[in-house]
Image: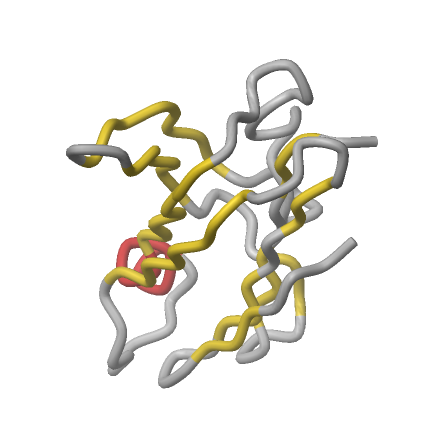
Length: 113
């Protein structure tokens, strides 16, 4: 299945990050907002960020509002405000999954499947 998906795991609380707002941008000559959504109880978006027919070659950015999420979750003293992840789509036949492993003071990501 091609397309674009994400999920967020809260490593501080040991749970999926529910109600975390994220925005998807396409980068070309300028940054263009494509979608703004929140994660569900599984730390995922209810639908793919981009269906296979919506995905195009080029550069994208996922922007996660982690400070807002941490404040709502009662995690105080956090260091991060927004986590931007820029990536490049080079093959429309492949699925792009961009997960975020999040704590109050750091994060990790990778290209998932």
